[in-house]
Image (cartoon, rainbow, N blue to C red; front, side, top):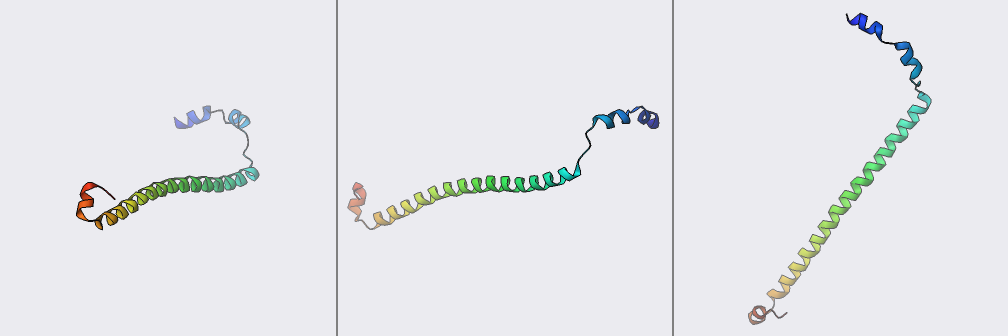
Length: 86
């Protein structure tokens, strides 16, 4: 039964309609496409890492500022700390 079904497939007509693959062009396109993909993914990864480090930098700046303010307030007399005068 499967053989009879395969005999009905118009291979000749399909072959005429399909464009033949030019391997002389296909291989360089695949090679260049591969390196293009590497560059594309690398740039996106660098952008994501850069944004993440930027947010960490902002957070780090706030942590340093809070630590410095706490250090400075710890050196003030108790009365000045209660009044909030720096």
